[in-house]
Structures are given as C-alpha cells and as structure tokens.
Length: 601
Image (cartoon, rainbow, N blue to C red):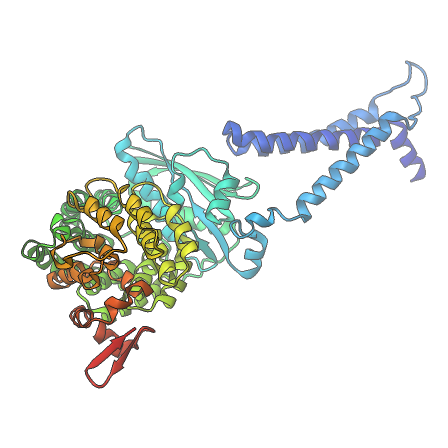
C-alpha cells in the first residue's frame, strides 16, 4: 500500500485530483449563477455536472500514464513546491465554502420571516409551495385564460395534499410575465418550492411543460413535458400534481378511489368555464354580466358541471355590487336588481352543492347570498362547512374574516385575516379588508403598512383617509380622497367629502342639509352629524343587499357616538345583527338589556 501511495504521488495523481476538484467547483458555481440570468433550460446544469463527473476518472487515468521525465528517463520526482501549496490552499477554500453552504443558514435574519426554512417545514410535516402562472406559448393572447386556468387547477389539486402549504393563486400571479430571480420570488411569497411552466394549445392538442425548483438555490428537482390530446387535460393535471407530490416525497393522503383532479365535463364547457372564471376574477359590471351569460350556456350544455354552477352563483351575486344604483342609494332602482339576481344566485349555489357536496365553492357562494341578506348565522355555518372541506381556501378565509368583522367580533376577525395574509399576501381586495381589520383593532401602523403597499386603483384611498381623519389629520384625509380615480363615486361626491373634511373639526351649520355621501359617509363623524353615517348602510339594508365590508368600520372606537344612538339599534335589528348576537354571543362592544333591548359602547 505504501508503494502504491508513493506511486500515486510520483505520477501527480493527488495534484491532478485537487486541481480538478477546484476547477469543477468553480465551473459548477458559474453555471448555477449564470443559468438563471441567461434563462438556460434546467438540463444544462445537469449536463455540466454529468460531464464533470465523467471527466474525473479520465483526468486521473491520463495523469497516471503521462510521463513527465525526459524521454527514456525516469519520471520526474514530484517535489512539493509553490504549486502544491497553492492547490492545497484552493482545496481548503473549496471545502470551507461547501461546508458553509451546507451548514450555514440560507437567509439573513431580516428575511427569516418571509423566506421559509425548507428543512424545518419538512420536519414539521408541511412544505410551502407556489404555482407560478404558466406562460401562454400558443401564439394567441386570447388563450391566456387557458394557461392561467391550468396554473389555477394545479394549485387547487396540490391544495388537497395535506402535507403541502400552497400559496394562493392570486398572490403567485403577481409575478406573471416577470423575469425575476426565483429566490426573490420565493422569499416574497414565503414559498420553499416553486412550480413554473408553459402551455401551448394548438387545435385539439396541448403541450404542457412543468418544472419544480427549490426556491432558495434554484435547483431543479423535477421537470416533464406532456404532449397530449386536449381531451386528456384532466388526466394531465392529475399526473402533474401527483408527480410534484412524489418529487417532494409527500403522501397524497387521498381516500381510496379519490383523485386530485376530477374529470367533470367536456372540453368545450371547460374552456368556456375558464374564460368566465377570468372575467369573474377581474370584477366589474360588464365582466360579471358577460360571465353570467357564458356560464348559462355551459350549465345548459352540461347541467352536471358543479364548478360552473358555483361560479355562476358568484357572477349573479356580485353583479349588484357594481351597479350604479348602489352608490346612488336609489332604493327603487336597486331593489329590483337585487330581487332578480339573489334568487338566481341561491338556486345556482344550491345546484352546485347538490351535484358535489365536497366542493367548497358551492357553500361559499350560498354563504355570501345569505350574508348580503343579513342571515349571518346561516352564512357563518356555510363558511365553516367550506373551511372544513378546504381549510386553506383563500375565499373561505376572506369571507369568514369579513363576516366576523361585520358582526363586531374584530379580534376573531384579525386572527382570520392574518392567516389569510400569510397565504395570499398580494391580493388587493383581501388586503383592503385586512388593513381595515388592523385599524378596527387599533393597530394603525400595521393597517397603514398594508394599505400603502397596495397598487394604484386597489381602492385603498378611502380606508387610508378614514385613518387619517380619525387621528385628526383632516387635510391629509381630504388630499387622500382626492386621489381616488374618477368613476368610482358619483360626480362631485369625492370633492364634497374632501371639502367637508377641510372644515373639520368645526361643526356644520345645518348637518341635515348636507349632501348624501354614500360610502364616504364617515366624513359626517367629523362635522357634527354622526347619525348620518348610517344613511348608506340603511339604504343597503332596505334594498336587501348588505354589501360585504361596508359595515365593519362601525366597530372602530371613533364610531362610539353612532353605536350609542337609537338609529344604530334600528339598523342592527333591520340588518339581522341582533338575531346573530342572540344566537352566537354578543360582541365586545354590545350587550343585552332585558328581553328585547341592548346597548353598545
């Protein structure tokens, strides 16, 4: 053995091995850092690693047979010189760096709360993952909804795996079309793993490319191409979801005979369903109307397609929210619309539940119909049923938290909103309510941070103005209102609200003669007309449509004078709040007095 080791040294095997290790490590680092910048395919890194592994024995064999001495003489003695010490030093550095990468924390303390500890999550039995929006490679922007729908369906399938914490679809879609570093995306979403891919739909065929990467270092864990008939789309989604779970080594946790993706309809209906779903998510009166018309075709063609019925219920019950009659507070115009659409929404939601009792969306749609009618207890039971079926459903968390805030359970609402925010940190409509709930709990700094982080047009101006006015910054509140984009309120309403705020805290000479302010009625608090705050709420209750989110500000301390009024008592009875409190328990700020009365602080 001693002679063999001496021979290895004489033939420079040690020197070549050390040099090869240093050069190989440098090449691997270059590949890992350059590949994301150049958007190289994942197989490039694997190819470099494979070539380096194959090259090591070749280099050692070449060193063994290579004669370094002059021809005919003995091989030269390998003396330890400057080159040897340099190689030894380089090898020590490489070993130290590799050890640091393996043992040191992968993130700084400043980002620890945002970026999950992947190994800790795995040890705890949960892994955080986000499905980024798949790129539309079809060459037709009109097919964008199909690639988006593919991402959403895979998200929904993975959400059924109990060992996975799946980041919500809307937050993941914030990075659509952006060429950001995966580590930055993973940190922003709080996801340890990311799924990305592309969809190419041509005629009756679809080609889907998907890959799973580790967010903190960009290492590709799994990738696959699927080239199939469009009729196999549901089986393809199932295959992708199961392959990802297998790559993460997590159990599916399904009951015998169950699957992650159900083949519920034909391809034409599914295509129209995805198109309508994109419209409903985009909101707006025209989109809701178009989505309802499209979904009516779907359920006529395929009356057993439960998700389409649930989505149709949403299109119906969201439409009154965007009607101009709502802001006009003209009951004669608003009530007929509500009376026409809410029964249709309830019928569609009920049909979805009958067809698929395991579909959370059906219970959510039915719950919202009950909530806007003031049937809070029934709505809460339906939301709880949806959460029992899908504990991490963002819409279920949102609606449940919204209901708790509206009935005065603001502390419970905050717990729900924080859970939602951890899962869906970038959804504007969610974060507006979350900011309000922070404010209701007198956490102004947290509320402002959430609201100011919203993009333009997210309707955060009104709650920010409310916070500024409540803290006595009336001019700032007025300036904030004037940044509201035109078209959201009746002409002149924003300007009148801002004008009144600039006069605060002086009392208006004739409060009852002031113009109606609709959803900006909080201004009345600061000009000596607190009872008029309730006008907009009363109009909605009279029309039979208690719009979600409207009543929650009533539970802030600044509304104490409103809550103590007889007018508030009348509204609470009309809105069904008193019936809910008697069944579920009274909120912190209200308590019963005798058999039929109550008082609020």
